[in-house]
Amino acid sequence: MRTSKVHQFSLRSLCAGNQGMCSAGPRYEPPTKRSWKLTVAIPSSLVADVPHLREKTSRLGFLGRSLGIFRVDEVLIYADLSGREVAREGQFVSSVLRYMETPQHLRKRLIPMNPDLRFVGVLPPLRTPNHPLSGEIKDLKIGETREGVVVDSDKQISRVDVGVGSLAEIQMKLHPGSRVSVGIQRVAPKIVAELVEENRIDIYWGFRVTLKNLPLGRLIQKNRPDVVIATSRLGNSVDMMLDQLRTAVTGASTVLLAFGSPRRGLHEMLAEEGMKLDALATFTVNFVPHQGTQTIRTEEAVHSTLTLMNTISE
Image (cartoon, rainbow, N blue to C red):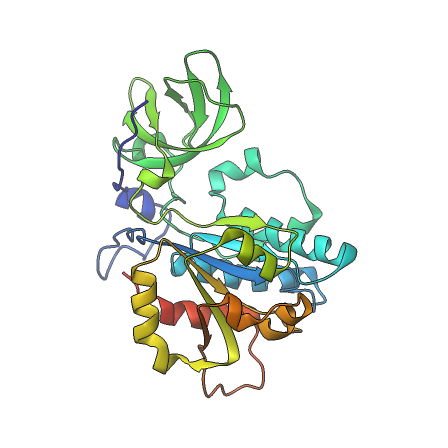
């Protein structure tokens, strides 16, 4: 079926249930998608040193908000621990971030019960354009794009839950349980939609979470991003690198931002793999020169770095 380039978004659905947000100030416009894919690589040990599950969850909530605010396309969790610890910690980080990035109306169908999610009530709402606030059919607009879950399908028609009570029909067979993006074509007497490939959506559509049981060096070699930006206190100060970074990302299709762990920096990690950071990274940058604290948590480093990266990209 033909897919269309979609950018329409319901301001009414954004404001519904969010009193005060739209009553004053400039009108919210969904941000456009970058011309290049931005991936943030974080370690599986990101919150391993945090003793309580509630605080672990809260820190990941701060990280998830940063990823959404600065239009990250993918968060890649790499293995920096060993044995069972790497699997356990990496799975926890993945579970919480996947819960957070999944639109609210899809969570019951897509996310099974999980003890890792005991404290998800402390997570802040993401509010990216693929997270509509309205769950009422009266707020559904023709031309609007929604994420949904395929509930059932026969040879010709699939029925998709788009979070408004009634199922949307798509004239094609889709795999039940799959997560899809759809464009609304008709609302009454029934909801009719078409499948929309995400690469045809020209507004920012949230981030995806990828968990890999591989160390960072091997992941970089396997994925081969166009530009690799390593973050390190030993790197060049960002104020000297802005023009070079801007030039590099402008001509790229994929950019990877790599962050170290609470225990070790990127130089140490790659040395354990028998690799050198300078051989893998296009740039090694200190994004927080003259830091006023002795240490910077990884989630704080991610926010600080993305703030500056946002100034050099469209």
